[in-house]
Image 1: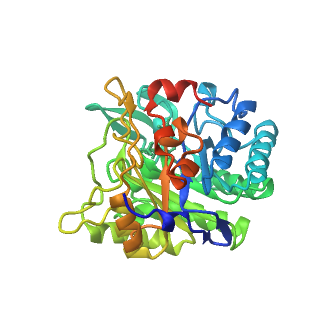
Image 2: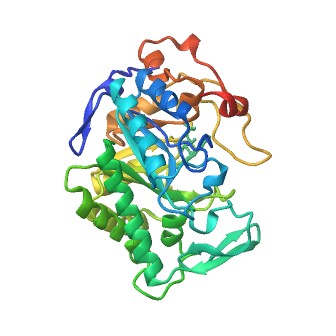
Length: 370
Ligand SMILES: Cc1cc2nc3c(=O)[nH]c(=O)nc-3n(C[C@H](O)[C@H](O)[C@H](O)COP(=O)(O)O)c2cc1C
């Protein structure tokens, strides 16, 4: 099963020291009430820090009113009550010796995951998002909408720094707002936020630049991106070649990002024919920045959603491929999602080789475990 020692070595992201290479993947839990993280979220995150994970990336948190369905338990990252509670969460994680970054989220046209099809309050680059042969119809963002949204991201990053977080991650994956700008299907703008694959990064680049201006040079800023999109568009691949991926990544890398979190469902899958390099591997090769891999690490099956969703996945303790790719330098960090829901002490158990104690993940686990 290979030697995991390398994955238990420390590293720094910008100036933040992480104890090891394991990261808690961002996972929406729906625990919040009216946007305020619940009291049990404090212990929920503290337990994962105690369990030995090097870095926690929180569930996605709304950057401003209208960004997410806070009424369905999504936490806000604005307003005094929510921010006070986030401060308690960061403090509790630090008391356990952990590190924590908040995932900043704006769902854009996917606020209701494509279930609401006509709603002018849904904002996106061009006001439409393809879903099941139809489309969500919302509103194309004006320049003042864009300016206000960039300001909201920057204010959230500044709040994270003030509250003692160790950095922020922009949710630019899975078809949400930033990804709607990235994707040609949802971005037909003819102004400076539209155009080719590099030009479509401009919205994100301006967010990063404004955040950087506010938080200074040493506060880590990451970006999560993906080829796949919700709802159900797992197999699309907008960046069809490695050179297209490079045109996408370079402006982002130049904008002041510290790390890329490359969201895939199976960490070992090659991104393009001809080599076994994964999305994380290509991203590392093309940018040299810190790279996170993710997708079914420690589990027998990939994440799926909907009625055919994967109800359970048993522990997988064959880390041979993961170690080979890590030792080859394909990525620096490994995000663990469902395995950490089922096993808050997953990193410690794996480090100590206590594999028999690892529990399977199930949808049941997802709903009841804290
Ligand atoms: C319950 C649940 C909630 C999730 N919520 C988010 C989220 O808020 N933001 C995000 O970027 N990814 C989210 N994801 C995706 C995970 O971060 C991760 O990429 C995915 O689960 C694959 O990792 P795994 O196979 O280790 O679970 C979620 C996954 C799960 C299972």
